Length: 305
Image (cartoon, rainbow, N blue to C red; front, side, top):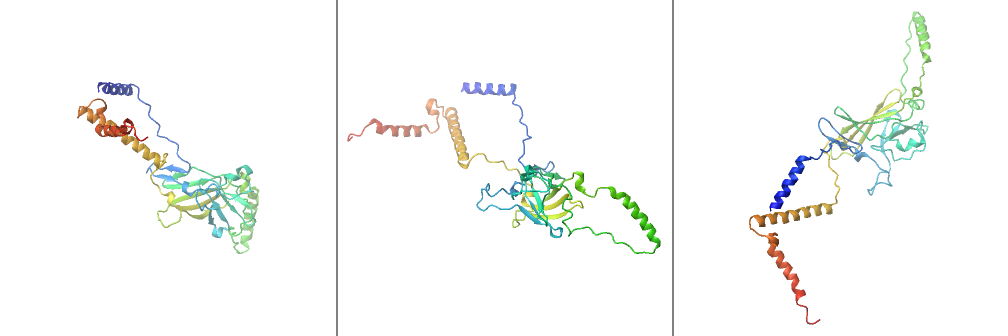
């Protein structure tokens, strides 16, 4: 018993003299996850990621990425979350072949040309209380303005007035001609298409996993806005991943219970029952009886053999 006291005192003295360094709480997060610095809510967009059918573990995997209709815009858009689209892309306007496997959003115009509207991004951001996912580095801006005719801006109508306004109009036209030297093609400035996806929480259990809608694009066709409603965009509690199998967890619990049984029984037998030696073990009489029962067949061999 004194040896136990001496060991405990030595351990406490060593722990006080050389404390262990505190572990850093800034553990790296999983891709496509973020924690709100204000509310502490944890967001995980990985359930929205679609993997190729060859890599999927489910029996009936999806064979295409997420799609949404542009309606009056004239295009249908294809997107994926937390990874590139699973559709094979052989040629994308303004994108190198080495980067085709990183395209996370694209559309195809009437002529069949494919335009990327962003490369994959695994880092969502919080704009106040808004969860946003942004894709950048797509095709050059303005490359498909000629093929899209359904959304062309309406020209200003000319106002027919008295002849006195003709001279004034001519002077204005002359001034406009002077400023026509500026390049009209926004792609000449090196700008590239990008995508902004606003993630909205949907807690309805009957709703699909994702409802994706196209909101609009800017005049230069450089930035495309989408709205995504999903239960994955609802903040929750971060659940630690289980590293042990159910059998391993049961084994650990059984070992801990056995250690508690032995140590607790020994302490009780020594302190309360004043037992010494092997008699300190809990239920010593039971274990000794089992051991004696197993020794009987070996002491008296069978005479008929």
